[in-house]
Length: 449
Ligand code: SAH
Ligand code: SF4
Ligand code: F3S
Image (tube, rainbow, N blue to C red; front, side, top):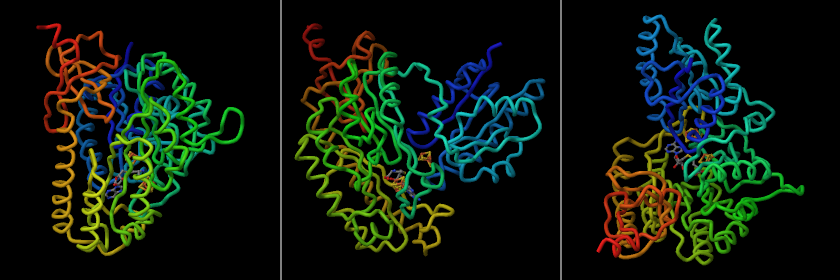
């Protein structure tokens, strides 16, 4: 009998990748993915702890899941509930206490044990907690299956973080920095390409700190790895995220210059434009370091577009500090960005500092976001009238339409036949909506006349 699996994924792309691997792990036990938790036999919440709101959502979702589980039990059936990911890692015992109906709690480094945990939970006898940091990386235990990755696939190459920015939970939830061996990464990339991937985004909490064991011995940095992956036939596009400004080395800059598959778009979070705040955050770079790095990258790849993360209202941030952030934004010019109010996280150094009033954070966030949105709109509008190579990924919302991405990660809609999914097609950009572009496939417009 086929059983139904529902996974809800919160947070970053690393969690999206992990969720896909979890689905692969339980497939041999007879679990097939379902679209809703209603009536599911196994529900996994793959959680995020990065900001307070993200973590709160989990407990409210658990309330809903509990009702569904009770309903299933009244019908004489069973629903296993698992909480995975970074909230599980950080607050595992709290979850077991506050939500005793949860059957399994495990962190990002132990989900390879999922089949065993499911078996134990199915036998009954109370919740199972596994938030250890195993000595052997989970990647050595994950099956080398061939998933259906879609045209644009994710591939984790590095995990954890040793940077300890004072606001951030990641070093605690994901553990110490670890890079997968290059041969393992290349083998996984080959499987993804064989299954239809044309674009791969390499993932890591600190992806450009990658230093995996090379095939010939020694170590490879991210630049070396990109070079090797670019040699895989059929792999047309490479991206990587998230990078730390400190770890952008010359090899990586050269990769942007030399490798056509490396897309001219880089997410390079700066967090703040104030050196005082950057130092307090333990970011280990100044605003000028960031400017210099961006200048070098743009010299190597003049059409490089940048995106960033920003935190406003960090403890002690003065109006002057905040102005420095706005100045940096104006100077650099971002194609896209994410910005957040500082959210104190339990166990992190900045959480015990004196906090700014929420009203100040809210005001600064609104001002910063207005500026960032203006830059994003301008960047998108500049595409109108140009032709862009678009990798079509899937059907669009309207009939006859496909959606793909530009080199700069902009979503692009165009009328196109389904056979074009997986192809890179030149699209004349004609319109722009809030976050996406619309266009006409070159050649198709003349053909219609
Ligand atoms: N590894 C990445 C980002 C990890 S978290 C990096 O080094 O930049 C993603 C983003 O969430 C961060 O870039 C930061 O802007 C934001 N963030 C992390 N902790 C936060 C907190 N306590 N409050 C508000 N935003 C936070
Ligand atoms: Fe968090 Fe800083 Fe590590 Fe990024 S570099 S994951 S912000 S500690
Ligand atoms: Fe969230 Fe963990 Fe990713 S805290 S952002 S899911 S690394």
